Image 1 (cartoon, rainbow over the protein chains, first blue to last red):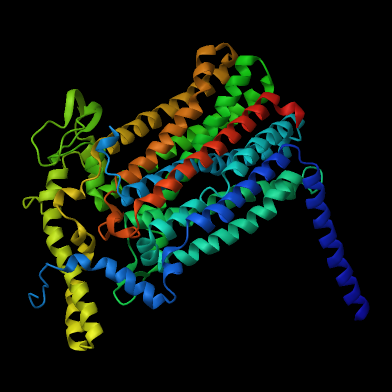
Image 2 (image 1 turned 45 degrees about the vertical axis):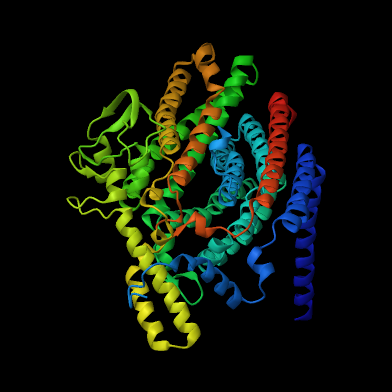
Length: 92
Length: 512
């Protein structure tokens, strides 16, 4: 039983090692890919660390603390034009 | 000209979304389409064992990699904008799209991280069969990752399977299958994916034509063309077919958009499709100016056929849709506005009754709201004419798309004909034209999105939510700043893509 478990564990480790080597060697052999990875990292940094952080706050998430408040705020945005219009139920 | 633009926040937000979406779309169709063609090249290599096909497959794979790397994450900016500029919209549709889009993002990431690596790094390191499987999975995964965003877009054009919950101010999904498999969504997905394959075929045609003109990589270029032109021909015919199906669907659910496609102001029986015509940019729906300037040619009955599958049938014009047409039982936006304003007023009364704890009144107002809720969006319009999209832009984009769409199958047929005759390399005129076909494909593809999105205006969600209400209540200053930041960022990315791509093309496949 123990021998079988050890064999399994060793098998998993070997498999993970093969996958690791597969990616490592693949990345090492890249030529144009290295430039592309640099572009990807710079781009993702600009997108998330600069644009998202400084310029694109989630308005409702940062302005209100609960979903109830967010829903109420959006409802207020949906209903101001109701003023001055006839309510079909009571002619309000 | 710029003084004619209304530079309010909502228009800056629209412009910013359009800018980022159009830049994003420079990269996406090539990624979606070329993965299929690469999978075919790879399959031929595995089947024949011919090393030339391997070289060819690796070359196109590399160009795909450049496009993918530059384009990846450009779509995330659209998501940023939802939260900042379109927070009302974002909140209202969160229940319908939030989870599926998140799941799609995660699945696409793992699929890509696994199979992309095997596809690019797997040469001589995994079995040929598994390597080929990975290449096909990249094609499947890339295209699957477009499903939910296209379903979301289709839903905005035709919001089915939902109900508005006035307690949470959200549209809630009532029927997943209605949302995911609406005919609008199916047409949109098939139209986008088939046109993307068409675009990728044009990309390969352009570069291969350039090689043939320069007398370089002749075998690779010819073989690339044979497969790309064959697949491109099928894709272009299919794109025309499902484009026609899309128009049929639009006629049912967005008749105003269809009328704008054709500059049709007065509804007609046996309505014609415009073959040649210059739209009158100054015409308004309420005036008596002629819709076209000077000479124009209509093909009788074809618009009726496209809209209703019957030559003699009536197609409503923009005037019918704005002011109504009792004879044809068409409700105009003027009448819809009345009902929409009742929906908004009932919603307001319902919320007030809820706040004051008057449950009986709340129930009554909710019933009134439910009676008129399908017209909710019209309640926010100030005048009926606001329901008309920008006609000239929609018309021109539609006709550019159609004309180019009809041209593409002919180009593919021409290439296949001369390849079969063995005289393609001598046809310098065709090869010269071939080098710009990718640019034409890009113009057609971008025009297609202009048609879809500008033609939908003024709605964020058709009939239910105009863009003026979907936006965040912010000033335009921040949006202007980020608009120009995106313009610079995307332009730099585009320059990077073009320069890396051009360098790799000029190196060619030998260096792989």
